Length: 223
Image (cartoon, rainbow, N blue to C red; front, side, top):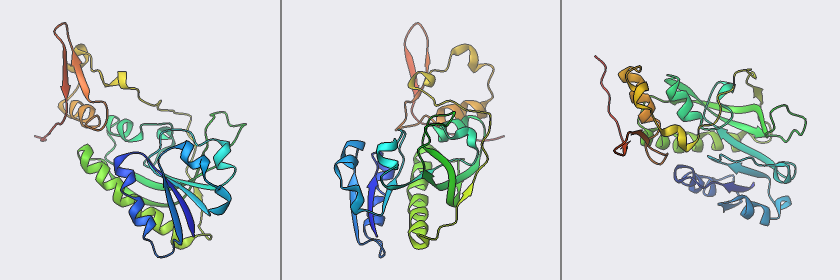
């Protein structure tokens, strides 16, 4: 098999070595950006693997090569960006990590290339600190891509249900926690808010007339 691997986040870049060395992979190339992918002769490759992307693939790619990604949520409401942060803030402790297919649909009421079709999934533990969660994503991505390669082209596709609920993608400005909200939150809710924004994400912070207090790492014990 011949595979293009596209990633730019540190945890995702670490997955590539296991793809490059996998026995069933005859040839592979690593791309850091969309521009690098488009420079390749896509017809020479069987698959494009994307890992940890937060941008749209677009029809100029997904219509020219079979494109696969990994998605770290079980519910459809988290299909629109920053799924780890939103699930943690919503109090979800365990979720799924899945291989999914990109399909461009110009008539979709929600314009993106997410097909909601998945071939493999593994459990994902969201109770950890962010560094531990990202290390887990590296390992589970390797498992998912290896399974997909082993089963290709006879992969069995399933579909997760589309929801009317949409949790909108978080922005860096959402890392601010107003002082008046702190007294309304439990210690566990505060822990989840700051935990999901540990590095490499925009750290959670509290602002007043004196300045900004950034919380880089948190620890929590239940009574």
